[in-house]
Length: 130
Image (cartoon, rainbow, N blue to C red; front, side, top):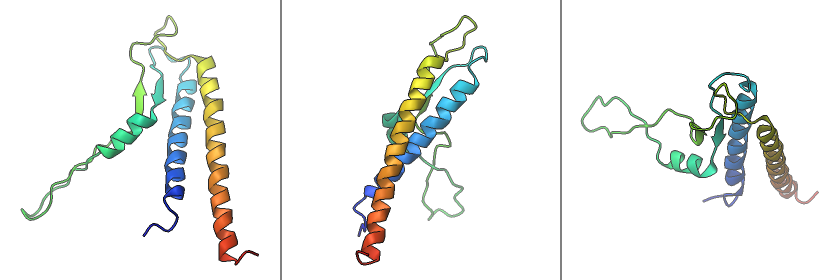
């Protein structure tokens, strides 16, 4: 039985995506002057497909044990390999990164507001409407 209808877990996945995207943008901004650094980005579609296709590998000590594997990479993050923004081979466009950071911050704050509203509603229900 799913007590909350999946809404809170969906919001959690959205917050995880926004957090990973924020870390990726911060890494790009930090490496704006690094020669041959390739800008990275996060794709929600790629993140979702990577999460669905992830596998873990474990050592089987008995033939009756199940085989399983997991990929140990950060899901959804990819590099722009052939993109050069500067003559030193750096692929970071500072204006685009700042715009992306502002957009992601708005998205993250909206998710936080929504999950906060869900928790406030649950709190009101628990207190009996008081």
